[in-house]
Image (cartoon, rainbow, N blue to C red; front, side):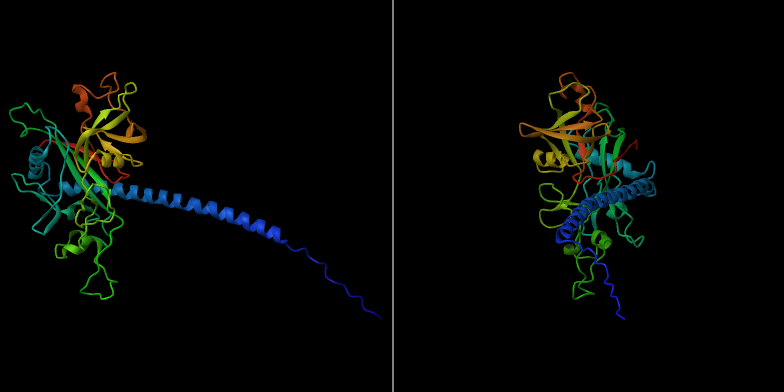
Length: 346
């Protein structure tokens, strides 16, 4: 008896065209997903930095007031007032406190050179404080002050209140820490970031700034202390109205001769202020944000929020009320944390 052989039903395979189409669709999906990842990572980084920044900002007050020099009524405030008086280009201008390297020991600290000889070490301006935890310093804060009293007063500046601004900024992320020649021959063991910033025993070539700029004042983001590089201080410039628009004024330009401190010239100041998310303080200590930049006759015109006061109807800053605006002060490196501003009457 013959046996009937049943052959399996043939299954239809994918054609080459179908495979190629599927690969194309998959590739497009992966490309879209890849485009999303940087945005997600950036937003996550900003959120983390903002959260840490708020914590660091909240820690600044206790750090200052815990110091004998900067307790309420402490001698540090009097020395800050003397510093402002000695360094202001004009009465009542913002003055950024510039860190100094003194005796190769107090590197990067604030030597106020006032009547009380107050010195504020860099270690007290880092957060988390160096060697206090396993975490390396993530932020550094800087001070700027201005005298708010009446220059015509016979006791000025001795009786002048101080407007104090605290700028918090991330430590440069590109710092390349030097290797420790005492413990490693293959350059695998490097000095900690905290040591690179504040340890006076380290050789100068192993030291780094928390934040650095090149000779023009442009951020290097690598903590460099090479010749031509220096600690990154806040930038102080004069602003003037754009001459267009109606009050309230929300447009301004940097005066062509109005760079007071921190950068080489107005072109560099324009570039730094044009960075996305940039914010600055006006003379009164109010935080304003740059929300747009257009170029006219080769110079950028900045749009700001909130607008400036209604100084006049011409769209300019001319007149006695200009002091409500100038000078303005901002950081070369954009941060996610507003400056903390308060008044002290030493």
